[in-house]
Image (tube, rainbow, N blue to C red; front, top):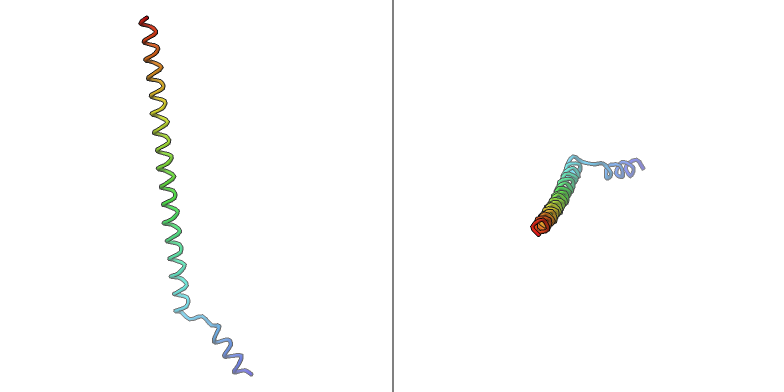
Length: 76
């Protein structure tokens, strides 16, 4: 009976190689998650930058046309 119990305990014991494989797996998961997060953040930054540029150009165009119409009205 003790032999069966000892065999069951021995089969459940972790080895150094088991722990090493688990640690490597966790490291790989962490690296892939980090890469994915940085890619998403980079995409967000680029999209926000593009929206800001379009907004600035729109405002500049609006103010430029408004100024041009104001100058044309003054000339009449």
